[in-house]
Length: 291
Image (tube, rainbow, N blue to C red):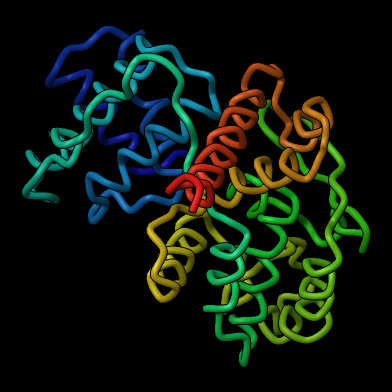
């Protein structure tokens, strides 16, 4: 079911701005993707928006022209929110276009990922769920939408079946640590959260047993990242998964299949990230010349 805000915005574009059906289609499609990412339209700031644009540019392999269209669509939407009194500002006005050339994704180090996961208080059912969720996202390089649409039947201890973009199905091995947390979640926490909703098929559920939403996942992640002192987005876990695999010796074609990229050129961006990280490490530990 389409979001009410998308329908209202579509009506505004048609009746008040009198845009063509083609432009309306582009604007509403971009808005739907933005809302599905988990970002809160009422509170999102320029920095989070800029990271969203960068993530989308990399994930979708967008050209500079397509990025410009995305920014126009988002700028128009936030202008609409201003007109309706939902926001006083338009954060897109502070977001610059990505520079021409190679755009590198934001990647966390292994230590930073561990710091993030350690910030999760796993003493209650929700905490165990979150630890299992974010361990799985990092272990398997999942998109948030893919994690939210997992069913219990998709998990089989050693691997998960993921339904990605355009309904493409892929099978991804689950790491030992993630498996331990997911097993613990399934054994104790999920039954406590599901309660009487025994027919619920979603793997990850909320406090009332309903399927977990992207917005809820995003909100929880932002809180944990803040507690860990990290300025990263949830999509950083997917970028980090790919980069850490390549750094560990995985071949590019295998990483492409694990990420569900249709074009290997999209995956190749992570080889540049790894090279940049190695260069930075070299310079950090090899400065000052001979003693």
